[in-house]
Image (cartoon, helix red, strand yellow):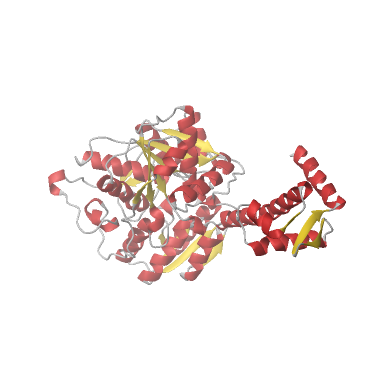
Length: 465
């Protein structure tokens, strides 16, 4: 059945609804819990291994979701200042995000109920996942996207032949459109914020963590609408209720500073998110102004004696590069926010350096084209900077002593090819900054007065930086 988390009123599971008709509270799926001796997990690690704690499904739609690895991030932990960090890498799912778990359960449920069309509002991952699983199941998938969406995720939806419609600036607007469409057409409502089965699918992440690792002291999750952190918390609570786990983790929820409705709610001791006017962040997967599942997120953080904090976009991007450079995991910005938050918590003493911490990596950075463009720009800037730096080194060397190309190559530690050194020499000669001449069968170079002026200009520029 469905039960209101606020007033406890119960409803039948069909037709599916997300909010309580009495008090407006969020609804969650509940079932009679079996005892530990009555339950068993069967098959390989993945979503369907936990069918006994999932809503009943007759026809399973699967692309091999779940069973994702946990990485011991030793170099990252050292950089952040912790003894241990573990990354639950959901980028290894079929469409490279954790939403594949929900898409598998929702499309299976839609088939069981006799639907042939789904509608979903999404700012990226959920739309891509549902499009893929709908293609597998032969369903028609309508995805309502906001104007601001990662093009990489949009490309996935197009490839899987979803019907895409743009509505509104951010996902809040798209959700309202999807809700109206489902009511008007009778299509299956597959929007993450409007279908309680999404939480059920995503809680299997916790079951996997328990079997792979045990129970960490802290679990760090990025928050958009708030449903994901509650999914993870619910999974761990069930493990304890079933008699498997002996302890529970503290939950840490992270949001961008420009879209921090749930963080603000906890700071002001509200039960629900405080609406953010004109929200902004480059972490588009968690760009939400009025999170519909904030009540669930607040509940998870408070029940677990956890924490919530906001991080800047600059900190998120730095963390994304850090994870990739140190651990070989390319996480999307939303996921990288968890590492940015950890760094702040360690520095402030919010988490002890000896604590065991697990971060949820929800999706791949390959989907976030905005970040890819930033990285490309950085690479071009770095190449340009290297070129200028090399020419400056040549000028400074020649300002002290006239010499030849091979000698310069040796002085620079052979960090580039000899051909590259001669290319720089030719370009400096063309600009009149150096001149070449023959001496002892070798071509020597000396700096000109124009070259010395260029060096003085570089020095003046550095004083201003």
